[in-house]
Amino acid sequence: MTKVGILVGSLRKESFSKKLAANVASLFPNGYETEYVEIGNLALYNQDFDDENNAPAEYTTFRNKMKEIEAVLFVTPEYNRSIPAVLKNALDVGSRPYGASVWNNKPAAIISQSPGKLSGFGANHHLRQPLVFLNMPILQQPEAYIGNVADLLDEDGKIKDEGTVKFLQSFVDAFVDLIKKHQE
Image 1: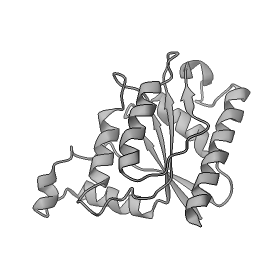
Image 2: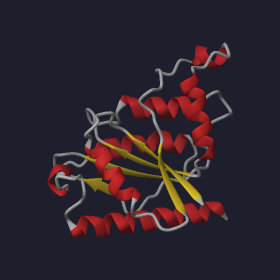
Image 3: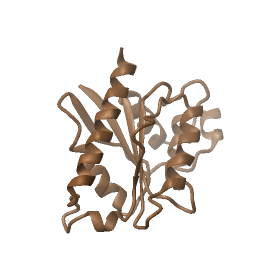
Image 4: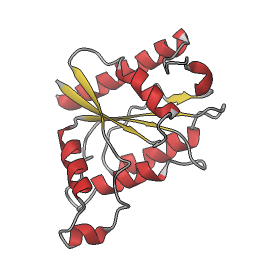
């Protein structure tokens, strides 16, 4: 069973990113297990915690969980033309202490979304920058920018547009292919 961790860049309980992630999680084939990984409880990264062997328990729990994960799906909104601070903080916590990054060589895919038409383009591309540095092979195509997300979801949070579901299935299929390449 291949474990795919899902990191959601929004903490809001009714976030569009969470709803979108739930829809996408159901598109993975047999043999793939998706798991949401909590990032909202992580204290802001401070190197002193690691240097003084005093890392918060939440850091240790997060790092241990990410060590079990084989690939990562990021689903995020855009905040001020970039990624939410909670997502950047999770990347920083997981990349330390130096030489013990939990991200190294884990395939990644990014879905950005917004209720507007720009569909989180800035967040998607800003997130790619640290993932390259963290040595995460990133799904290049298809790129997933989901605009007008509120209009795509029904009252239960399910995607009601069949074309969007088909697109997201092609995205997941391409991500699965990338994961397989890195398991060989």
